[in-house]
Length: 393
Image 1 (cartoon, rainbow, N blue to C red):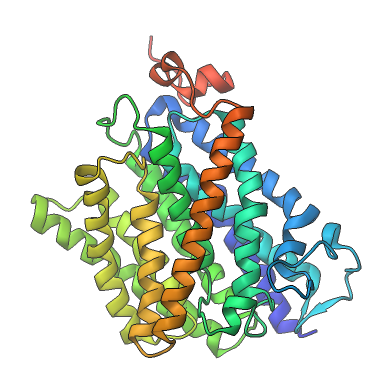
Image 2 (image 1 turned 90 degrees about the horizontal axis):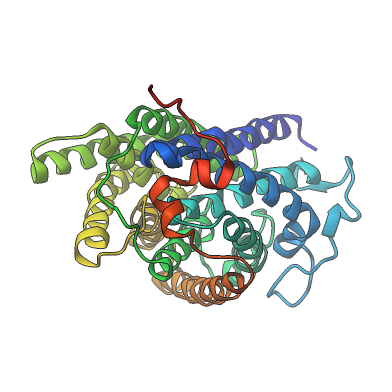
């Protein structure tokens, strides 16, 4: 065990959990209407709790177990079987590696929340998220990071697919799942209401930015120069994408909005994620500059051309950003085109099939969508018996 590496990953684990709680919750919560903000908080918090338990029960073993088939890790590490405080994963206590990866398993299904807020059933959220993490996310983790990010990984890692911190594993899978659910669920009855609290959005985005240092820098699994470079390029891409989004928004619409600026931040962060362990500062500037414009155009296409109500633009920002960053690894000559594109196609097809099947099956168990009256009045009071703000007399 290396003490410095262990100390850094303990910090990184806390930072990645901070991304979901409270970062993502505030970012998403500020973007919805006031009568639905508590439902968003409830979704993010409940998912964090449920994924933590399921990661212990089976998720970690499926992702990082030792099954020789190469398709999944098996169940030999279920409930952390055979792992104690002295067990090692590289230079780290394995229980710490378990905890670090658990925070990734939390935020990935939590990202999907943005696609279906303001109209989804709470039972569906928990049931779908739990099954999707075990049956979609965890197997993909094994395929790409099956060696615990300490070797070439699983079957896709062995053929050269490079994904340092989750462009494919996290952002492509969550983005595609979000898109599919949005299409199946259908649009909200009122799509024109602006974010109820842009201040929450900015605060949440700032928390995500800080937490992303643990997300990308921690994926080096060591306290070394690689981690420092990953953090540096992450910051540069986020800063550049924020400005390129705002500039493009000003050119197109005459004004640069605060919500747009911080959405650009998230686009830059998602786009640099798969490449953060391979690129340098100048390449990070290029990725960020393109991401701010590319993801903004993807939002326009989704909303105005395809008329898909992916409520908080999960696919356009996270899905497109993660896919773009994965491709840029090949464009910069840091990975092969065959491996990068092949990995995207294989994981994309698998994610689509599993997501569609799970949505259809879970909808037979618990309602997919709330009724019209609940949607109109808001989910907070109708579903959870609370409201975020006192009504004025």
